[in-house]
Image 1 (cartoon, one colour):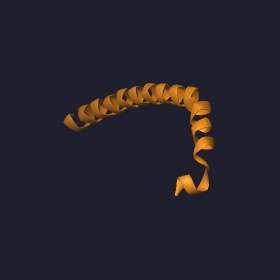
Image 2: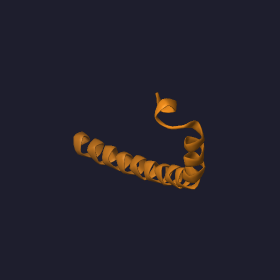
Image 3: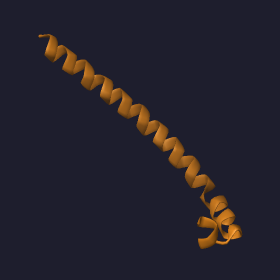
Image 4: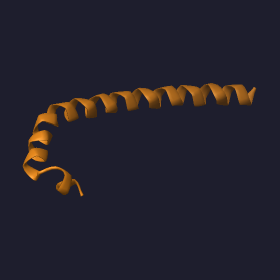
Length: 53
């Protein structure tokens, strides 16, 4: 399907252009994910304290 829509060569060039963007987005995603995990842990901790009282 994709090969039909885009010639293979163009797709390969596109991927080469996107390589640094993909690298940085992956890095940012990892960073955001770690922050979200920390926030979720804090929320769970607070909820546990509220429920236990």
